[in-house]
Image (cartoon, rainbow, N blue to C red; front, side, top):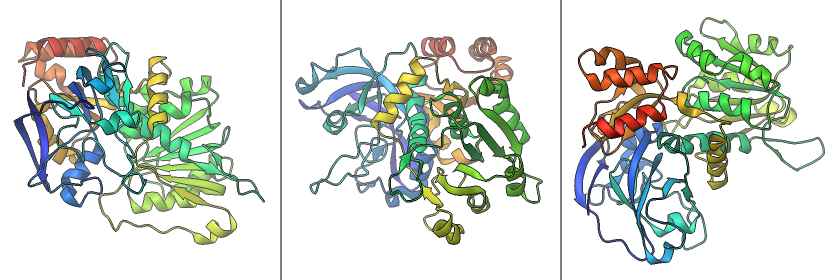
Length: 425
């Protein structure tokens, strides 16, 4: 079977290729991808090429399919998995396999980085045995595909919240998770992942009493406050504050002031920017935990951290790169129940043809998640631009009308219309 896929051949060398997939082995699964969400991690992969920690091939000889936030349908299961997975089943994947090497040590190999025949930016893929053996091929039951493509980024957020830890004096036991009823700050927190973190902080069972979200852009802050309202947070027992720190001489002092002159239990940093990291350090209270969520592209990235407070105030720092399967299952479960609605992450929609340049330019394109329908040929287009584009194209006119009835957000009806009417790749 032929597939079309975006593969990385080297640094910033992404190509839309068409090639033949081999016949699946007894322990593999053939699948059709429907949607993939482009992640900043794929942008970093493009920038770094073979230097990326998850790449294991000589990309000039064995290019790999990119994309790891995908959702699709099983076409055929090899005999080993035929009882567990059926043709027609929808699926999502947890790409952080942690598959053990010969020494039993978990590797960094993952779909979208490390494999020739599996990645999200493709029409058809072969799912290798590692995915099933690690229980990372997950059943997906919703009546859409785009939420399945958001499950992986949401799982990264879930994992970050679970990775927070705190201690009690005289004890070496780590109490995992944010401080329930405590104070949490999300710095640079209104990008797509920050929005997901606000949603999760408000709606998961372990919630802070104060949630402060900062950024330096009023438009982003205003959009966040419309989508995730102060009133909704209050219903859940959370005081939510959106703060623009751009023109503040001492933002850390102000954030301390609005917390009753107290420092914070949990601080998340969503931008790999030295002053933001250092502000997070200044905001930590006793036994405070700083989560460096944003992975930098600069391998030498560093920032000052107060080690006096590490010693005497029990400050600590954590970082996570992706979630695990439990985090993914929690994400899928909460979305299925309507407890999380991460659709506000999506700001652009496009086809497989748009993936190479979008991935390379991702850090320069404003907005949130860029959702790709892999069997379609479409320019990457902002949902906010549908109406303007619709003046000359009835396809976008209809999409604008549908999204207009859903608060300007992507939705199941829009997806169904696109899948039915957009040109094939």
